[in-house]
Length: 139
Image 1: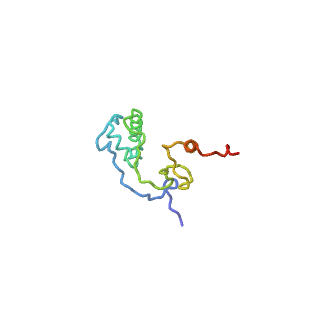
Image 2: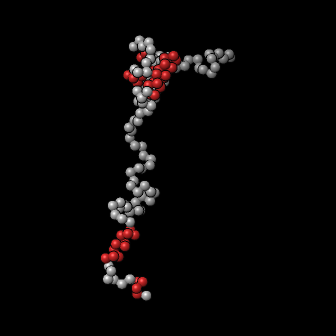
Image 3: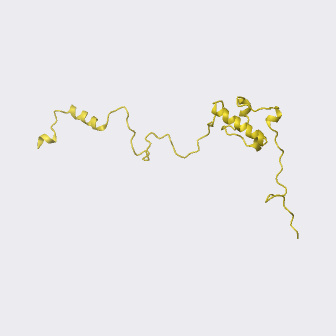
């Protein structure tokens, strides 16, 4: 019972085979990757402005290094974004739509922002009733 010899270290004999994608640089016969060619460089970036993988873009190692370098220069020159925000549906979690911002929830009454504080409001009510005797004067 002899075992089959494996090729390489720990790699299976028949890995998944996929058709190698051809690079847009080869298709368009680009000799030099220019950092000013934003349309070309944006093909190698995801919707969140990340640099695409060699396997995804179809570049070989040399092309990928040139593209990555050009994208980094273009980002520094503000021709390309460092990151894009993608609008997505809310997933739940913390609710930011609370007005009071505390943990009490509905137990606290909403605060009137236009009126003065309660202490000043009570003094104003006491000024209207000057005719009524106070507790201090009765003693």
